[in-house]
Length: 123
Image (cartoon, rainbow, N blue to C red; front, top):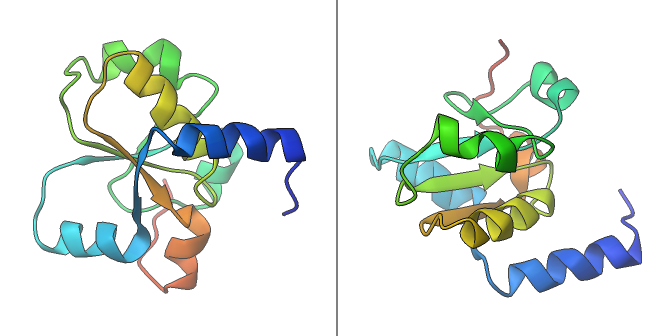
């Protein structure tokens, strides 16, 4: 997908402040039993088509509004993903501004997960 230049500018700015991980690292950490919440920030229709097993869905449109109710611990380890790693970087930046201090964005996102042939789920 070709993204608009101003959107890409926003993403690049957010990525300066956000810790990023990637698909192989997240899978390795899962397999090692590391405890973290994997949060899918994609739209409802994207989630319905498939998502990473055991992920929590808090779409980008509502996560800032609902995060404090769903995950009140601002020190909780959160790994966010979207389609490719752009929206998740924007959300990670916002969550950090809200006081969440252990947030990562998964570069590659859902596309990278699927392209790697990793397990998927549907609810």
